[in-house]
Image 1 (cartoon, rainbow, N blue to C red):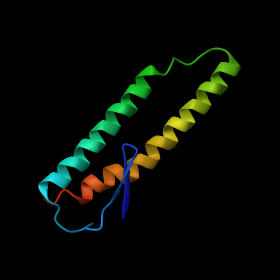
Image 2: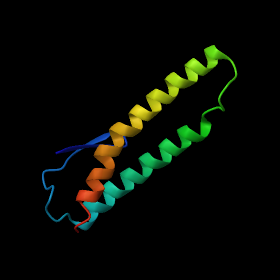
Image 3: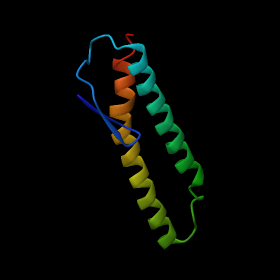
Length: 86
């Protein structure tokens, strides 16, 4: 299984097996780093505009943000859940 976490790629051949503490901590740290980056992006987004053209641009930016969240959520969060058996 391949996990994409914080723009890094980890090959996780031991899914379903016990992970060593250091591997679990690294995966956990990467997920937390990714969450902080996602939170920073969200906090810098502007309030919804009254102008249609601006709203269209905001909608597009939000779609990109949501796609990025979705892609990372399944990989990153899933790996930490799978690796909780240390």
